[in-house]
Length: 240
Ligand SMILES: Cc1cc2nc3c(=O)[nH]c(=O)nc-3n(C[C@H](O)[C@H](O)[C@H](O)COP(=O)(O)OP(=O)(O)OC[C@H]3O[C@@H](n4cnc5c(N)ncnc54)[C@H](O)[C@@H]3O)c2cc1C
Image 1 (tube, rainbow, N blue to C red):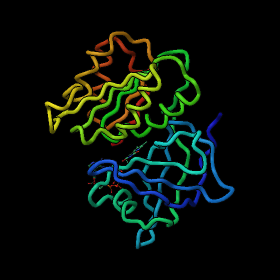
Image 2 (image 1 turned 60 degrees about the vertical axis):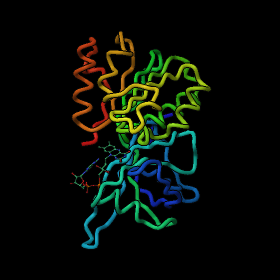
Image 3 (image 1 turned 90 degrees about the vertical axis):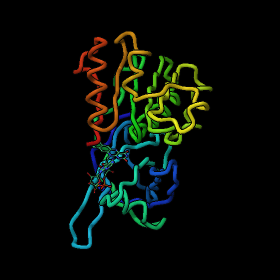
């Protein structure tokens, strides 16, 4: 399937669920008879008009896979005073929300290799959609997910990711908490995601994707280069 050219749509806000202390899962339903083709890993611009009539837009990655029809989902960190994230969070359900998309090249194009995904925080968003779509399509090479977050309470989609990994042996998940709140109960790695890259990644034969804030992406790319990765071959989604 190919992605459509970007278009502007009115969608209906139908779900607002807290998935951590500062992150929400939002769902936007397409209106009857409307939809677009997108690829897992792409994003939309969510747009609104301010009281002064100025349009404000921000990018949000699809965190639902294309095979789920009729709606798209977004995993959004609520930023205090944020022109879109805070506004979105306060919006009543069933309000119309304008989106423009799909955009982006953070998509799997080489299905012949194992895939390496490295995420920090809400950077898991595009990977949730990509992993669900790949497994749904029967992708049988390995998918390695290295995922870093602040504490165990910030492990977004934990139950779902663990269930998928239990059902699909080719999904290998390495979570790491920077500062576990309950270290004796946390059985996985501790430290930033960059610190576990050399522990688990010993060769370079992957389609590689990195998503997170600029310092994390920069440090991770440097670490991958130390292992021998060619920077040009790494797909980056930088949320600066
Ligand atoms: C391709 C792409 C995909 C993206 N996908 C997602 C996604 O799926 N989920 C998601 O949550 N974000 C995503 N982002 C980031 C998103 O576009 C916004 O930048 C973010 O939500 C802040 O927008 P805002 O309007 O709420 O805040 P703004 O009005 O832009 O900022 C308000 C204040 O908060 C600060 N700020 C901005 N972002 C953060 C932050 N993350 N943490 C702390 N302070 C911050 C700003 O510096 C400013 O001082 C993506 C960005 C890109 C480029």
